Length: 236
Image (cartoon, rainbow, N blue to C red; front, side):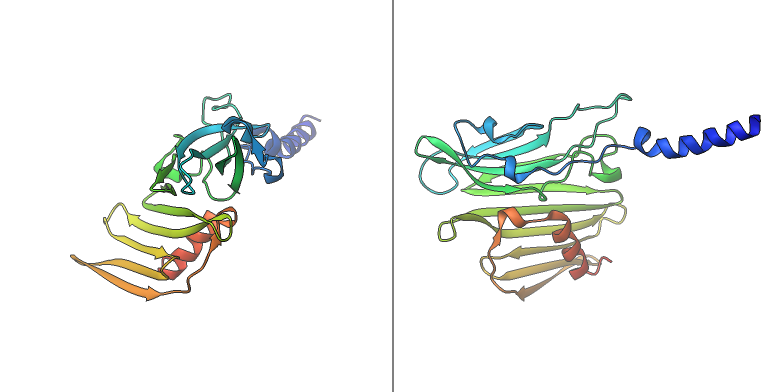
């Protein structure tokens, strides 16, 4: 009787364990809940989300202050054990229009989550750096363990298409044990991609011409961009 009870208890634990002990995954923002117009930047964070970082600058050349808003899920920063929770992020670009603020783009797959830094960051939240440089929104983030992946995305307003487009993407893979770095830098406006590799004490650069493309800000998926870059560089 005792053996039967023990077996049944173990089976019960196996069924409840995934839902009881598993780390809750990072969420993805619902773009439909982000308003197209508001009176203040904070109103662009829908229920369940909040502004983690706000940077301001003129993004379309009209002399008015625009905003790039990093949103993060409004979950508790830490769980019951004191470890950081896994929270999703999104980037919203807001333009000043006739006394109000208008939504110019929402990227739901661009920014890495707060626990997506890998062993390099351990239990520390993974940082994301968003800046505005000469009217360009610049996004920098990294993650990894022995091999550290570093990426930079650059977005600029396209008046013809009335949207923000990706104009530059930099990818670098650094082996922290050997200090060797493999990287590429792509300029989608000029159609040039430069690849750099360490060869002993030398750095070998290769220049390629690629099609000039306008990639919408909203459609950029960082996981896909990194995967494609790693394949081009022969990293896997």
